[in-house]
Amino acid sequence: MDNIQERMQRDIGAKLMGAPDTPAKSELIEELAQNLLARYEDLVGSGVDSETAYRTAMDDLGDTAELVEYLNSLGPEESIPNPEDQKQDPNFYYTNFSSNPGWSSFVSNLDGLMNTVGTVINEAFETAKNAMKNAQTTISDIGEQAKQPGGYTYRSPKGSVSVTVHNNGEEPVSPPWEAELEQLLQEKEDALRKNLEEHGITGDEAEELVQASLESAKPKLEEELKKKWTSHKGTPKFTSDTCKVDFQEDGNVMVDGLLHTIDVEVSGDIEISENADFQESDVVIGGDIDKLSVVSQNGVLTIRNSSSSVNDIMRRRGWQNPNVELILPKHNWNAVRAVTVNGDISLELETAADLVELSSVSGDVEGHISECKLLKLASVSGDVDFTANAEAANCSSVSGDVRLDGAYGDLKASTASGDLDIDGSTGSVSCSTASGDISLQSTLLPGAMNLNTKSGDVDVTIPDEGPFVVEFRSMSGEFSSEFFEGILSGKHGQFKYGRGDGPVYRMQSFSGDLNLDKL
Amino acid sequence: MSISADTLRGHTDTIILTQLLRGDNYGYEINKNIQDRTGGAYGFKEATLYTAFKRLEQAGLITSYWGEDGPGARRRYYSITQDGRTAWEEGRREWEDTRALLDALINLEED
Image (cartoon, chains in turn purple, yellow):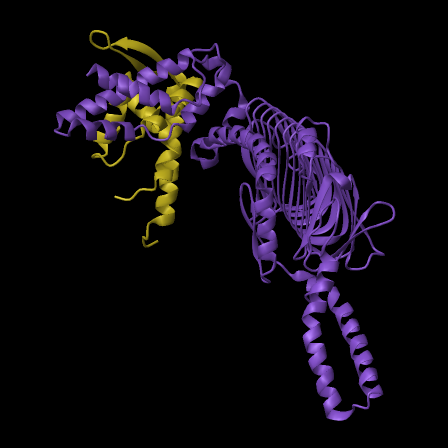
């Protein structure tokens, strides 16, 4: 029977893993095991087989989240609570938490928070790592899928995002050599006719000869022109189906063709801006162009570190981080993607894009875009500072701060040690950080709000409107609110402001203060 | 018998205090008594029971002590305090009021 009891203690211990190992925990495990053993013995006594009895007894344990929370609420040294100390805390019985389902999930939420922080770090490193590794596949996917109007799925390293290709409302571009071919054929035709006329050949006979001659000349001419437009000597190396690529006098590179997707992945700084005076087809690429490889294909402009043995070695040793300066025409984009390792990223676009994805490892990510369906911003050690109108946004930094301005339909932001500062209007917003503060100011009443910190404070300012329900919990911090001035403060509770049904705002911190104020 | 678990949950503390009014006891026996009294229809999950014990203990409504139970085995016994008796009185009165109110509201009787 002893081994059953040990097994029970072990299994119960596993369920209470979220709580620190204290004398109180040991006693609780002993007590629970003691009782479940009695239950087990009763079951076996009534003829139930051993394994079923064990499972039934363990099943009777139920949800242990509240017990874990209780153990966590005790100090590390405290073995048995002193009733006199606890009794005087008026906040402890603010609402009936035993009937509040949110309460029992508090501890698992804190676990979730710590997991989130872990995920942020992992994701940031994964993004950077996979970005470099999967670069070729990803971009050829975009190129391939972009050919099919109606939609493609952009594969990010952490899952799939659907993006609709609208082709910018443009007609498909025709090869640039077609006009030249037309002109050459016309010249050839004119010369032929003149020649025939001189020889006294006219009418149907002449027409037949002209057509036959042009027909046989056309393929050869086209071949020559195509070669002329697409071949290029020296670095950078260009390949192009539909775009003309040429050097400018100032050393910049000109890509002539209609683009819908920009994909930059290098190890230095990336600066993307636009010029309203540009033709639809103008793109200027500057920076360390001799260390870059540029490919323009099917409307996708791809820029990478150029791959030569010398460049690779230099780059691997950190001696070479080619920078990119990109000036785009002012039109809408399917996707703008910029990924770097050691550099900063700056993006300034007055236009719209379906997908904007900017990611750096050690640099800052900053800028603005007027309109965006999905915005993904990430840095590991740099700051993220952005202004956008985005339907959905996912912004994170591990050790840097995240500052966002603008309007966001569905916003997710997270850091590990940086602060989160959001100013604008948000639909549904979800923020988590471990040691940073969260500051959220919204000119609209958010549709949903979920803010979590471990040691930071949470400051929220929203318009004086209702209705909404605020659900707040802090283990050692305090909640205060202008909405409930003089009515409530304390550690945890669930309160409603205004009449009718409203969104739920969750504010949670382990040791930080929670503030909800009027705009 | 279909009783809303939420209704019962609201009276968890009073139910436990009622059991302890009969004398000091340990968790398993308390839960077993509750099950016996309801013909096996209702009993607490261990975790719910112990969360309630800890809550009551912190509020000073019950106290606990380790008692010997055969060689090598010990059990934690719970005992109701004077505050606990007062709280039970309140809980019971609250239930009487609730019952009277619900009787008036729910029962379909001629006025």
